[in-house]
Image 1: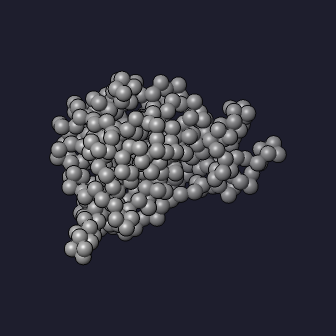
Image 2: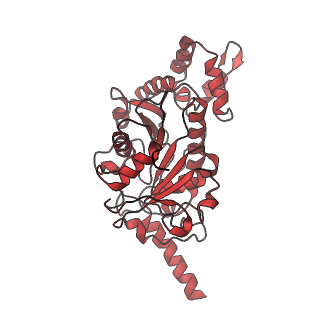
Length: 348
Protein backbone atom coordinates (compact mmCIF):
# COMPACT_ATOMS: atom_id res chain seq x y z
CA UNK A 1 0.00 0.00 0.00
CA UNK A 2 2.84 2.37 0.87
CA UNK A 3 4.43 1.71 -2.51
CA UNK A 4 1.14 2.40 -4.33
CA UNK A 5 0.70 5.64 -2.39
CA UNK A 6 4.23 6.65 -3.27
CA UNK A 7 3.58 6.10 -6.96
CA UNK A 8 0.37 8.13 -6.75
CA UNK A 9 2.12 11.03 -5.02
CA UNK A 10 4.89 10.92 -7.61
CA UNK A 11 2.29 11.01 -10.36
CA UNK A 12 0.62 13.99 -8.73
CA UNK A 13 3.94 15.82 -8.69
CA UNK A 14 4.40 14.99 -12.38
CA UNK A 15 1.00 16.51 -13.07
CA UNK A 16 2.25 19.75 -11.57
CA UNK A 17 5.24 19.67 -13.88
CA UNK A 18 3.46 18.64 -17.03
CA UNK A 19 0.33 20.79 -17.13
CA UNK A 20 2.04 24.06 -16.40
CA UNK A 21 1.83 25.29 -19.99
CA UNK A 22 4.28 26.78 -22.41
CA UNK A 23 6.18 29.43 -20.46
CA UNK A 24 9.28 27.33 -19.85
CA UNK A 25 10.63 25.23 -17.07
CA UNK A 26 10.83 27.79 -14.26
CA UNK A 27 8.90 27.44 -11.03
CA UNK A 28 6.37 30.15 -10.27
CA UNK A 29 4.66 31.66 -7.28
CA UNK A 30 1.03 30.91 -6.56
CA UNK A 31 -1.33 33.29 -8.32
CA UNK A 32 -4.13 35.24 -6.67
CA UNK A 33 -7.36 34.75 -8.62
CA UNK A 34 -8.87 38.08 -9.63
CA UNK A 35 -12.62 37.74 -9.15
CA UNK A 36 -15.55 39.90 -8.14
CA UNK A 37 -16.78 43.19 -9.61
CA UNK A 38 -14.37 45.30 -11.68
CA UNK A 39 -12.52 48.43 -10.53
CA UNK A 40 -14.80 51.43 -10.23
CA UNK A 41 -17.69 49.44 -8.79
CA UNK A 42 -17.88 51.53 -5.60
CA UNK A 43 -18.45 54.74 -7.58
CA UNK A 44 -20.96 52.97 -9.83
CA UNK A 45 -22.94 51.74 -6.84
CA UNK A 46 -22.96 55.23 -5.33
CA UNK A 47 -24.35 56.70 -8.56
CA UNK A 48 -28.00 56.77 -9.68
CA UNK A 49 -29.80 57.42 -12.95
CA UNK A 50 -33.03 59.42 -12.75
CA UNK A 51 -33.39 58.39 -9.13
CA UNK A 52 -32.80 54.68 -9.82
CA UNK A 53 -29.90 52.60 -8.60
CA UNK A 54 -27.65 51.25 -11.32
CA UNK A 55 -27.57 47.44 -11.74
CA UNK A 56 -25.08 45.98 -9.26
CA UNK A 57 -22.21 44.27 -11.14
CA UNK A 58 -22.00 41.62 -8.42
CA UNK A 59 -25.67 40.63 -8.23
CA UNK A 60 -27.56 41.77 -11.35
CA UNK A 61 -28.03 39.05 -13.95
CA UNK A 62 -27.01 39.90 -17.53
CA UNK A 63 -30.66 39.98 -18.66
CA UNK A 64 -31.37 42.60 -15.99
CA UNK A 65 -28.38 44.59 -17.21
CA UNK A 66 -29.61 44.32 -20.81
CA UNK A 67 -33.08 45.51 -19.82
CA UNK A 68 -31.63 48.49 -17.94
CA UNK A 69 -29.58 49.68 -20.92
CA UNK A 70 -32.43 49.03 -23.36
CA UNK A 71 -34.46 51.64 -21.48
CA UNK A 72 -31.78 54.31 -22.05
CA UNK A 73 -31.19 56.41 -25.13
CA UNK A 74 -27.84 56.04 -26.95
CA UNK A 75 -26.72 59.37 -25.49
CA UNK A 76 -27.60 58.24 -21.98
CA UNK A 77 -25.75 54.97 -22.49
CA UNK A 78 -22.63 56.79 -23.65
CA UNK A 79 -22.80 59.16 -20.69
CA UNK A 80 -22.68 56.21 -18.30
CA UNK A 81 -19.85 54.60 -20.28
CA UNK A 82 -17.74 57.75 -20.06
CA UNK A 83 -18.55 58.21 -16.37
CA UNK A 84 -17.89 54.57 -15.39
CA UNK A 85 -15.79 52.96 -18.16
CA UNK A 86 -14.27 50.26 -15.95
CA UNK A 87 -17.69 48.94 -14.99
CA UNK A 88 -19.58 49.34 -18.28
CA UNK A 89 -16.71 47.75 -20.21
CA UNK A 90 -16.98 44.57 -18.12
CA UNK A 91 -20.74 44.46 -17.61
CA UNK A 92 -22.14 41.31 -19.21
CA UNK A 93 -25.49 42.18 -20.77
CA UNK A 94 -24.51 45.75 -21.69
CA UNK A 95 -24.61 46.61 -25.41
CA UNK A 96 -21.55 45.22 -27.16
CA UNK A 97 -20.48 48.41 -28.92
CA UNK A 98 -20.89 50.38 -25.72
CA UNK A 99 -18.50 47.99 -24.01
CA UNK A 100 -15.94 48.48 -26.79
CA UNK A 101 -16.14 52.25 -26.29
CA UNK A 102 -15.93 51.99 -22.50
CA UNK A 103 -12.89 49.73 -22.65
CA UNK A 104 -11.06 52.09 -25.00
CA UNK A 105 -11.47 54.76 -22.34
CA UNK A 106 -10.51 52.43 -19.48
CA UNK A 107 -7.38 51.13 -21.21
CA UNK A 108 -6.19 54.63 -22.14
CA UNK A 109 -6.73 55.76 -18.54
CA UNK A 110 -4.21 53.21 -17.24
CA UNK A 111 -1.33 54.90 -19.12
CA UNK A 112 0.32 51.50 -18.97
CA UNK A 113 2.51 50.59 -21.97
CA UNK A 114 1.80 46.88 -21.40
CA UNK A 115 -1.71 47.48 -22.72
CA UNK A 116 -0.89 49.74 -25.67
CA UNK A 117 -1.50 46.87 -28.11
CA UNK A 118 -5.10 46.72 -26.94
CA UNK A 119 -5.81 50.24 -28.21
CA UNK A 120 -4.77 49.62 -31.81
CA UNK A 121 -7.29 50.86 -34.41
CA UNK A 122 -10.10 48.43 -35.07
CA UNK A 123 -9.68 46.39 -31.90
CA UNK A 124 -12.91 45.32 -30.24
CA UNK A 125 -12.19 44.84 -26.55
CA UNK A 126 -15.16 43.22 -24.85
CA UNK A 127 -13.65 43.15 -21.35
CA UNK A 128 -10.63 44.65 -19.63
CA UNK A 129 -9.58 44.37 -16.00
CA UNK A 130 -6.12 45.73 -15.11
CA UNK A 131 -5.97 44.09 -11.70
CA UNK A 132 -3.18 41.59 -11.11
CA UNK A 133 -1.63 40.45 -14.40
CA UNK A 134 -4.62 41.83 -16.30
CA UNK A 135 -7.58 40.13 -17.95
CA UNK A 136 -8.94 40.87 -21.39
CA UNK A 137 -11.40 39.61 -23.99
CA UNK A 138 -11.31 40.68 -27.64
CA UNK A 139 -13.78 40.04 -30.45
CA UNK A 140 -12.78 39.12 -34.00
CA UNK A 141 -15.58 39.71 -36.47
CA UNK A 142 -18.97 41.25 -35.78
CA UNK A 143 -20.52 39.86 -32.62
CA UNK A 144 -23.77 41.70 -33.16
CA UNK A 145 -25.94 39.71 -35.54
CA UNK A 146 -23.44 36.86 -35.84
CA UNK A 147 -24.88 33.53 -36.95
CA UNK A 148 -22.19 31.67 -35.02
CA UNK A 149 -19.99 32.58 -32.06
CA UNK A 150 -16.92 30.80 -30.74
CA UNK A 151 -14.96 31.48 -27.57
CA UNK A 152 -11.27 30.65 -27.14
CA UNK A 153 -10.46 29.68 -23.53
CA UNK A 154 -6.66 29.58 -23.16
CA UNK A 155 -4.46 27.76 -20.69
CA UNK A 156 -1.44 28.70 -18.59
CA UNK A 157 0.76 31.79 -18.90
CA UNK A 158 -1.81 33.98 -20.64
CA UNK A 159 -2.72 37.45 -19.38
CA UNK A 160 -3.34 40.91 -20.79
CA UNK A 161 0.34 41.42 -21.62
CA UNK A 162 0.90 38.05 -23.33
CA UNK A 163 -2.51 38.02 -25.03
CA UNK A 164 -0.96 39.04 -28.38
CA UNK A 165 2.59 37.73 -28.01
CA UNK A 166 4.29 37.27 -31.36
CA UNK A 167 6.11 34.08 -30.41
CA UNK A 168 4.16 30.82 -30.57
CA UNK A 169 1.20 32.57 -32.29
CA UNK A 170 -1.17 29.61 -32.24
CA UNK A 171 -0.64 29.25 -28.50
CA UNK A 172 -2.18 32.66 -27.79
CA UNK A 173 -5.88 33.58 -27.67
CA UNK A 174 -5.38 36.12 -30.44
CA UNK A 175 -3.59 33.68 -32.74
CA UNK A 176 -6.15 30.94 -32.16
CA UNK A 177 -9.07 33.32 -32.69
CA UNK A 178 -7.74 34.82 -35.91
CA UNK A 179 -6.85 31.43 -37.33
CA UNK A 180 -10.28 30.00 -36.53
CA UNK A 181 -12.09 32.96 -38.04
CA UNK A 182 -9.98 32.76 -41.19
CA UNK A 183 -10.66 29.02 -41.46
CA UNK A 184 -14.42 29.68 -41.37
CA UNK A 185 -14.02 32.41 -44.03
CA UNK A 186 -15.60 34.86 -41.64
CA UNK A 187 -18.45 32.50 -40.83
CA UNK A 188 -18.15 32.93 -37.08
CA UNK A 189 -17.39 35.74 -34.67
CA UNK A 190 -14.65 34.66 -32.28
CA UNK A 191 -14.03 35.89 -28.75
CA UNK A 192 -10.47 35.49 -27.50
CA UNK A 193 -11.17 35.28 -23.78
CA UNK A 194 -8.37 35.70 -21.25
CA UNK A 195 -10.94 36.46 -18.59
CA UNK A 196 -9.49 34.52 -15.67
CA UNK A 197 -6.24 34.32 -13.74
CA UNK A 198 -4.18 31.55 -15.36
CA UNK A 199 -1.36 29.54 -13.77
CA UNK A 200 2.19 30.73 -14.43
CA UNK A 201 5.06 28.34 -15.08
CA UNK A 202 5.32 25.25 -12.95
CA UNK A 203 3.72 24.73 -9.59
CA UNK A 204 0.68 23.64 -7.70
CA UNK A 205 -1.58 26.13 -9.51
CA UNK A 206 -1.30 24.19 -12.76
CA UNK A 207 -2.00 20.87 -11.05
CA UNK A 208 -4.92 22.06 -8.94
CA UNK A 209 -8.38 23.28 -9.84
CA UNK A 210 -8.29 26.43 -7.69
CA UNK A 211 -7.78 28.95 -10.49
CA UNK A 212 -10.03 26.97 -12.82
CA UNK A 213 -12.86 27.12 -10.29
CA UNK A 214 -12.56 30.90 -10.13
CA UNK A 215 -12.44 31.12 -13.91
CA UNK A 216 -15.43 28.82 -14.42
CA UNK A 217 -17.83 31.28 -12.85
CA UNK A 218 -16.54 34.08 -15.05
CA UNK A 219 -16.84 31.94 -18.17
CA UNK A 220 -20.39 30.93 -17.31
CA UNK A 221 -21.33 34.59 -16.84
CA UNK A 222 -19.77 35.46 -20.20
CA UNK A 223 -22.02 32.95 -21.95
CA UNK A 224 -25.02 34.22 -20.00
CA UNK A 225 -24.14 37.72 -21.16
CA UNK A 226 -23.98 36.60 -24.79
CA UNK A 227 -27.45 35.14 -24.44
CA UNK A 228 -28.70 38.40 -22.93
CA UNK A 229 -27.60 40.43 -25.96
CA UNK A 230 -29.10 37.96 -28.43
CA UNK A 231 -25.97 36.10 -29.53
CA UNK A 232 -26.26 32.40 -30.41
CA UNK A 233 -25.03 29.74 -28.01
CA UNK A 234 -21.26 29.69 -28.43
CA UNK A 235 -18.80 26.94 -29.21
CA UNK A 236 -16.10 26.83 -26.51
CA UNK A 237 -12.58 25.91 -27.65
CA UNK A 238 -10.70 25.06 -24.48
CA UNK A 239 -6.93 24.67 -24.66
CA UNK A 240 -4.78 22.93 -22.04
CA UNK A 241 -5.60 24.27 -18.54
CA UNK A 242 -8.48 26.14 -20.19
CA UNK A 243 -10.19 22.77 -20.63
CA UNK A 244 -10.19 22.42 -16.84
CA UNK A 245 -12.03 25.75 -16.67
CA UNK A 246 -14.51 24.59 -19.32
CA UNK A 247 -15.05 21.28 -17.56
CA UNK A 248 -15.96 23.01 -14.31
CA UNK A 249 -18.14 25.58 -16.11
CA UNK A 250 -19.89 23.11 -18.41
CA UNK A 251 -23.05 22.60 -16.40
CA UNK A 252 -23.61 26.36 -16.07
CA UNK A 253 -22.98 27.45 -19.66
CA UNK A 254 -25.29 27.65 -22.67
CA UNK A 255 -22.61 26.40 -25.05
CA UNK A 256 -23.70 24.36 -28.06
CA UNK A 257 -20.32 22.57 -28.19
CA UNK A 258 -17.30 22.24 -25.93
CA UNK A 259 -13.99 21.32 -27.57
CA UNK A 260 -11.10 20.25 -25.32
CA UNK A 261 -7.69 20.30 -27.00
CA UNK A 262 -4.38 19.37 -25.46
CA UNK A 263 -6.30 18.72 -22.25
CA UNK A 264 -4.85 17.50 -18.93
CA UNK A 265 -8.39 16.52 -17.93
CA UNK A 266 -11.72 18.25 -17.31
CA UNK A 267 -12.30 17.23 -13.68
CA UNK A 268 -14.91 14.71 -14.71
CA UNK A 269 -14.79 10.95 -15.25
CA UNK A 270 -16.77 11.15 -18.49
CA UNK A 271 -19.01 13.38 -20.58
CA UNK A 272 -22.02 12.63 -18.38
CA UNK A 273 -20.04 13.92 -15.40
CA UNK A 274 -19.77 17.34 -17.03
CA UNK A 275 -23.52 17.81 -16.61
CA UNK A 276 -24.01 19.54 -19.95
CA UNK A 277 -26.25 19.13 -22.99
CA UNK A 278 -23.51 20.52 -25.22
CA UNK A 279 -21.74 18.28 -27.68
CA UNK A 280 -18.30 17.50 -26.25
CA UNK A 281 -15.25 17.05 -28.49
CA UNK A 282 -11.61 16.27 -27.75
CA UNK A 283 -8.35 16.57 -29.69
CA UNK A 284 -4.79 15.52 -28.93
CA UNK A 285 -1.98 15.22 -31.44
CA UNK A 286 0.67 12.48 -31.22
CA UNK A 287 3.51 14.90 -30.40
CA UNK A 288 1.72 16.84 -27.66
CA UNK A 289 3.61 16.50 -24.36
CA UNK A 290 0.26 16.58 -22.57
CA UNK A 291 0.05 12.89 -23.39
CA UNK A 292 2.69 12.30 -20.69
CA UNK A 293 0.46 13.79 -17.99
CA UNK A 294 -0.90 11.14 -15.59
CA UNK A 295 -4.68 11.34 -15.78
CA UNK A 296 -5.33 11.10 -12.08
CA UNK A 297 -6.85 13.21 -9.36
CA UNK A 298 -5.37 12.83 -5.91
CA UNK A 299 -5.78 15.13 -2.91
CA UNK A 300 -6.92 17.92 -5.21
CA UNK A 301 -4.00 17.51 -7.64
CA UNK A 302 -4.46 16.35 -11.22
CA UNK A 303 -7.48 16.82 -13.45
CA UNK A 304 -8.81 13.33 -13.99
CA UNK A 305 -9.70 11.35 -17.08
CA UNK A 306 -8.25 11.99 -20.52
CA UNK A 307 -11.03 13.50 -22.69
CA UNK A 308 -9.62 11.72 -25.75
CA UNK A 309 -9.98 8.31 -24.11
CA UNK A 310 -12.90 6.51 -25.80
CA UNK A 311 -14.25 5.68 -22.34
CA UNK A 312 -14.69 9.40 -21.66
CA UNK A 313 -17.33 9.59 -24.39
CA UNK A 314 -16.25 12.74 -26.24
CA UNK A 315 -16.31 12.94 -30.02
CA UNK A 316 -12.75 12.68 -31.29
CA UNK A 317 -11.35 15.50 -33.42
CA UNK A 318 -8.66 14.38 -35.89
CA UNK A 319 -5.31 15.99 -35.06
CA UNK A 320 -2.64 13.67 -36.46
CA UNK A 321 -0.84 16.43 -38.37
CA UNK A 322 -0.84 19.06 -35.62
CA UNK A 323 2.53 19.62 -33.97
CA UNK A 324 3.24 19.98 -30.27
CA UNK A 325 1.04 21.45 -27.58
CA UNK A 326 0.09 24.62 -29.45
CA UNK A 327 -0.21 23.47 -33.04
CA UNK A 328 -3.92 22.70 -33.21
CA UNK A 329 -4.91 26.00 -34.85
CA UNK A 330 -2.04 26.05 -37.36
CA UNK A 331 -3.36 26.66 -40.90
CA UNK A 332 -3.72 23.55 -43.01
CA UNK A 333 -4.06 21.10 -40.13
CA UNK A 334 -6.94 18.67 -40.02
CA UNK A 335 -7.67 19.81 -36.47
CA UNK A 336 -8.26 23.41 -37.61
CA UNK A 337 -10.43 22.18 -40.49
CA UNK A 338 -12.54 20.21 -38.01
CA UNK A 339 -12.68 23.14 -35.58
CA UNK A 340 -14.00 25.40 -38.35
CA UNK A 341 -16.72 22.86 -39.21
CA UNK A 342 -17.72 22.60 -35.54
CA UNK A 343 -17.74 26.40 -35.18
CA UNK A 344 -20.12 26.85 -38.12
CA UNK A 345 -22.34 23.91 -37.24
CA UNK A 346 -21.33 21.84 -40.27
CA UNK A 347 -19.90 19.08 -38.09
CA UNK A 348 -22.20 17.71 -35.40
